[in-house]
Amino acid sequence: MIKCIRWRAALPLALVSSLLHAQPASEDDAVVITASRTQQRLRDAIPHTTVLTQKDIRDSQAIDLPSLLRSEAGFEIQQTGGIGSTFSPLSLRGGSSAQALILVDGVRVEDASFGLSAIQHIMLDDVERVEIVRGNVSSLYGSGAIGGVVQVFTKRGRGAPAPYGQVMLGERSTGKALAGYGGEAGDTRFNLTASRFRTRGFSAIDPRIAPSANPDRDGYENESAAANVSHRVSRRHEVGASFLRANTHLDYDSAFDLPTDVHKSGQDLGMMQAWWEAHFVDAWRSRASVAEGTDYRTDTKNGAFAFSSNTRNRQLIWDNELRIRPEHSVSVGLEQLRQELDSSTVGQRSRDVGSWRLGYLGRLGAHSLQGNVRTEDYSDFGNAETYFLGYGFDLTDRWRLTASNANAFRAPSFVDLYFPFGVGNPLLRPERARTNELGLQWTAGPHRLRTTVFETKYQDAIVFSAGTTRNVRRASVNGVETSYSGQLLGFDLRASLTLQDPVEQDPGGQEVQAIRRSKKFGSVSAYRTLDRWRLGAELLGSGERRDTHIVTFASVQEAGYTVLNLTARYNFSKALFAALRVENALNEEYHLVNGFNAPPRGAFVTVGWQP
Image (cartoon, rainbow, N blue to C red; front, side, top):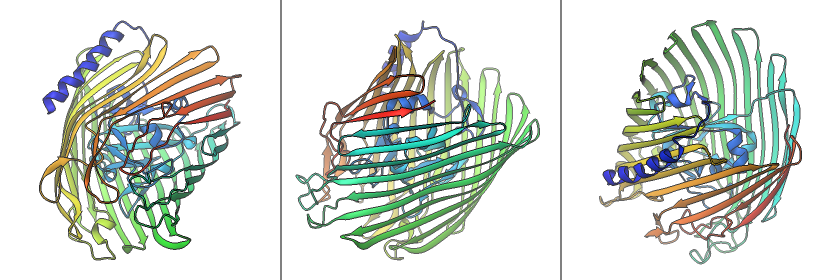
């Protein structure tokens, strides 16, 4: 299977390269930090890394984080209904949602019950950019970074202080209002954003598949606020703070109640941190931060209490980078994490995690090296050690080979350990994984094309079967992912293609395709500026996926799908604009999760002021 995948992935690489080889343009490489926890050029990152900028977010006109990530290589979205819907919203490189780590300004915002992050509540109005690192990077970030890391950076002020805002209206009684103010005043940078989103939505569950579900519309509300401020005290010292809060209300359906039952969920997602960055000497950069991530959720059924889960993650982080020579640096980090959970299903639980890490990043001519090791000490199950070894070789100024070997782990969540009601299996071992990768990258001016062949094998995977949670399931995924961004014939293009074979062992011992993971999926988007117009189209496609029936739990195959989104933006001036997004323009009827409806065709109009 892996040989077949390699040949199929090489075809788009060769075709795009032949089309673009003669395109002249200047190199303007982005700087990223997530791939190594030190600043480096994007083209030099050894893990498969991509950056989604303000321009990419603006072009897509996506509202929330899942809608933006859906078009990126390796990502599959598994939402159970419309925007804001619950369940396991994300799969990266064929893994579960708990095997991808989500950070906001470096802070964990995960729910300690299941080890998931409520990315469905992160509105893009608050986001400046997103960095995506694929593959095992537990040696940098600890538990959960098996499939990779998504780091969201909140908006920072730029230029002269100025207000901005927008209003959006659309199908299904959807509306959004946004107001913000930000900029630079002397040595201080700041940005403040507040938004309110509301939609009546559509019925989350398809009544043709689950007749007992309530057929009414399932709406969603999101009130978000974000702030980011920093002040340069002197040439060598800077302090700052950031804040994000999303208060949400969701209506959802159940396939096992009466058609008249009403289910609601209220969730409060938050992050706050304060930091101090110092350059005691030119070669030494030090950053200390204290942070807290929270996730509070309460569900009701017909107005009566049904479920609650309240998580608080407190972090102390001290990162240090020592630049030995211009092309060589060493990094050292110390972290302390305190996780606290108060849940109606597993009670009050807590754990403490202490960790240290050591890293090296260097270049010797055409050769580049990255090495990372990390040790973590968990109060409830002991030590976990991880590493990353990466190598890059510049074949030419444009072509680059990369290779890496790494391991990773995921600590059992409190639900894994203690569900139901404290019974559970407190002797669970962490899930562990080992990944080998080989990559080929081509960069020229604005063009960046990367193909990565990867293989990940899991051991001690955690599965719930026969009324208990246990370490029994073996799993693996091998595949090829390709991503491209650039300009061709006047169009700004982005494209991705993922071919993978995610396999897991079911409770009976048979190896089957991993649930809700397709073997092939991809996207292509094109945008072009014509005078005052900015026009765009995005095409998303996925093959069939194995799933379980929403009512009977029997194994089923969900059909593949193709979704077309169209966008247009008209600039009345440098600041005033109007925009249109037509979502699912061909009105494709499909399911991301068996029995749950996906959004039908809808049009949304935005008017805004953005200096």
